[in-house]
Image 1: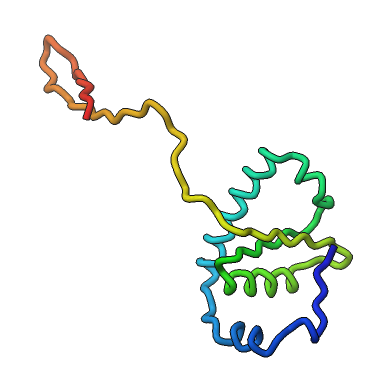
Image 2: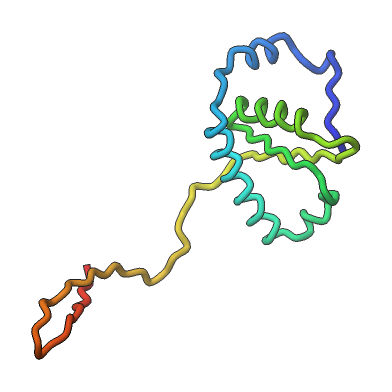
Length: 129
């Protein structure tokens, strides 16, 4: 299940493109992969048959179409971190839908504190905003 490229598979234009890409910071790589990891977990929950194709203890590498730099970085990191004999699964991500909230019937409230008196303890008044 490992991806093996022969030298004949790589064009000079690919090499030039990869060399011209700026280097991402570790924080950027982590943030982007965290989003992909979360979304991939959701995808697996919604498509359990997809999870059955992934070998136990496989290394999963995200390859988003719209981010060649992240693809390159993820591949490089994966090569360094891969355990001997570990299976590798490349997850090609064509695109990601815009993030939307699934919250329903939401309201925002503010609490105003009344002054306490001897006769009346502290009272909080709820106000809809």
